[in-house]
Image 1 (tube, rainbow, N blue to C red):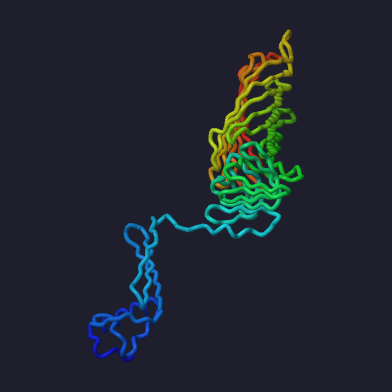
Image 2: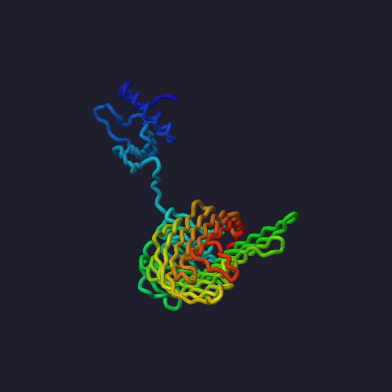
Amino acid sequence: MMDVYPQHITNASRTRLRIAGLLLALSGVWVPSPAPGAAEWAGGPQAQPVVTNLVVVTNAVIVTVTNYIVTTNIVVTTNGPVAETKNRWRGKDSVSVQPPDLGWVPPADTLDWIQLKSGEWLRGRIKGMQKRELEFDSEKLDILTFDWKDIRQVRAFHTLDLLFVDGEKVSGPVMVTPDLVTVSGATPQVRPREQLQSLTPGGSRERNHWSGKVSLGLTLRAGNTESVEYNAQAHLERRTPATRLSLDYIGNISSVGGVESANNHRVNSEFDVWLSRRFYLIVPFAEYYKDPFQNLAHRVTGGVGVGYDLVDRHNLEWNITTGPAFQKVWFESAQPGEPTEKIAGALAFGSRFDWDITRRIELILEYRGQYTSKEVGETTHHGVATLSLELTKRFDLDVSLIWDRVSHPKVGADGVQPKQDDFRLVVGLGVDF
C-alpha cells in the first residue's frame, strides 16, 4: 500500500509511524494513516494531535522469575496523552476475585440455599447450626460441614427455629446476609448476624428435629465349630436451637456351640441445654448396663452435670463432661451373706473426640467413667474407638474397638472372680438417616 504522508515529514518520522502502526495492528486494532495535508505526528515544528476518537485498549501480562503476575491496562488515544493504570499485583497463589453482589436471590424453593464466601451457591437442606458450625445436606455433595464464618448468605424459604444470644427464640423463613438475619412471618424481625447463636429445621413435623445412625454386624460360623455373633450400635439425636437430646445403644450377643458366650447391652441418654456456644448443662443423664458375665444383672445410673467444648472446629470437636450421679446395681449372684443389690453415689465423667480426617473418613473416640464405692465395682470405664468410612451418602463402613472395665468385679455365688476387662472388635454397616 502506498504511503500517503506529507512531503515535509522526515524519513525518521515515517519510520516511527510505521512501527506504531505495526504495534497497533498486532494488538488487533487497525489505525488509518493520516490523510495528505494532516499535521505532523512527531518530529515536525508544528506537531498537532490528530483527533479520530479512536480508543485502543490492550492487556499486557508480564511474568517474571519472582512468580508474581503484573497486569497492566494501557489506554491509547489519538486525541490526548497516553494514560496508563496498573492493577494491584499479588502473589502467585492469591486471586483477587470479588464475590457477586447481594442482588441475586435464589428462586423460591422447597429446599434451602447457602452461599459460600467464594460466591458459590449450594442447594439442599440445612440440618442445623450449632457451635458456629453449619451442617448442610447437599443435593449432589452429600452431608457437608462448614464454619459459620465461611457462610456468606442463607436463603431458607421454609420454617427454621432460631436462638439468639440474648435467649430470644423465633421461627420462620430465614434470610441471612453478611450483616443481618431477617426472619419472615407474622411479625418479621431483623437482627445483627453476630447475635445469632444457633438454628435448626422447624415446623410442625417432629421428625424435622431428629437424625441418627444405626450400625449392624453379624458373624456366622458353621462346621467343626458353630457360632453366631450379633452386634449393634445406634445413635439418635434430637436438636432444637437451645437443646440437644441424644440416645446411644451398644449391644453384643454371641454363642458358641449353642452355649451363650456374651450378652451385654448399654444404653446412654443425655439432655443438654446450651448456656453459651461452648458451655451447656446436662439435665439429666442416665445409663443402663447389663453383663451377666461380669456378674451385673442390671446397673442403673442417673445424675446431672455440665459440659464444655474444648475444641470447636469444622473438622475437629472435643468436649468433656462431669457431674454427680446416683447408682443402683443388681448382681446376678453373691457370696453367702452378701446382698444382691447395692445403692451408692457416684461421680460421672466423660469425653468425646470427633475428627473428620478427610471428607469420607471420620475418627470418633468416646469415653465414659464412673467413680463409686468398692461394693459396686469402684471405678468403671467404657471406651469406644470408631473409624467410619463413608461408602455412599447413606451407608458407612464402621470399625469399632470397644473396651469395658470394672476395677473390682463382684464375686458370684460360684466363687468365680470375673475378669476386669472386656474387649470387642466390631465391624458393621452403618446407615445414616
